[in-house]
Image (tube, rainbow, N blue to C red; front, side, top):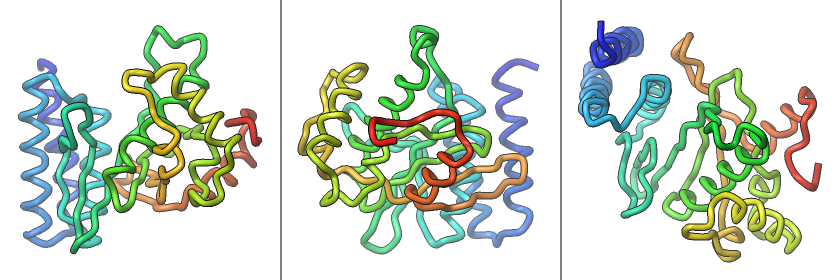
Length: 221
């Protein structure tokens, strides 16, 4: 079995689990998303570990009344993982699997923190609500200041986040205005094994993680 056949088989297996307990409308929406992912995989755009998390999260959002699109282009530079609309509002979800590029093998925590900060800052400007999706086994080390309401973000918070992002993401650089306005509203813990999603607010997530973790996430820890 080649990679393309395995990708399609895995998505079909997951889809049968996701659609076992939903109505025909939700089944059709999930099947359309699966077909879209198959098309993107043929173009070498998506990978299986990322795609299965997108589908599980998509089901969760569809059942909450959202219309969901996957791998949605926001502008010439940014494509988000899930773009969802309900009424006049929109929600963007970015999936994080924890992959570290080989060139950052000696600074994985710092690099990941910068990547998450950059995602929150860049994507939340397009969203009424912004969320990160994460598997249960992975810790999201994003700067704690981004979980605060923007009005509670200090100049020291902003300078720290800008320096962190500029270390890895300077083309284009994030601006202080973008950092001031950025916000993450939700964390979605996506359990592919059980095909379910747990929703948690970022502040509670960080508090729980810090109680169990041996690492510190930023200068305020």
